[in-house]
Image (cartoon, one colour):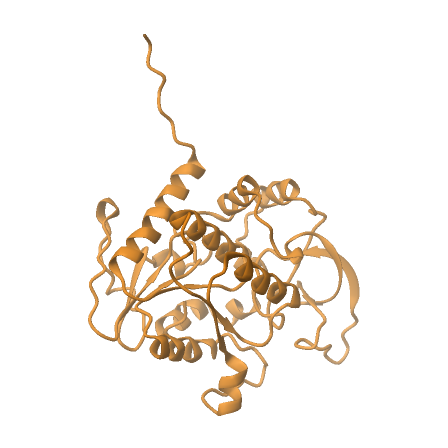
Length: 302
């Protein structure tokens, strides 16, 4: 009798690795939390968490660091999804931090930099010792340096030279009081892997991920939607363009891309043909400097 070779698909292997990482965190840490932005990566993480612990409920809360500059479609999706899964939602509000004087909004109106102290304050308040993040190594140069278990000191800071080896998928979860670990189950995924998984699992997404008509303005070759957080500047003329969003961030700094991809198969074809990562193509906050993301990560950003 001939043996049929046992093969695991690429997506199955990625999923199995991510499920193992999530279960390892729950086994090793006392107070994990999943950081949820309403973007495609955190949505996939939520789906993985659902599968990792089924038929039980997801055994940790979901936290959104809410800058107050979110797309309304994303907030609607966030609230609907956590209600469907019956998980605890914690909202760490940047606007409340501004109102209380804990942080100060910059003159350009971008709030990504001031997310960090709000995040660290919530970590201390709820005593989280491990935080799931949706970062992938293919997104950005600083994120390519990350381990799956990213050690943070008692100030929440990241030092890329002080990270632990991860040989044979063995993860060092030892931390002292006040220290924490950021955990990235999607580290080895690519944007295309994420979209293939979304298609395979038939995962619902916020509508802005698919092509639609939107009033935009061109700033330096990037198409920003006109909204209350991004008003027109003198001399600018808005126009309607058919666009979609490759990533979800603040409405004040996230650009759209021209696209007719209004189905998941069309999105997959589009992503397969592009040579620029979603952050490089659409995130104005990452263009402040070459080291913008790394600087924020060193301060405690996820």
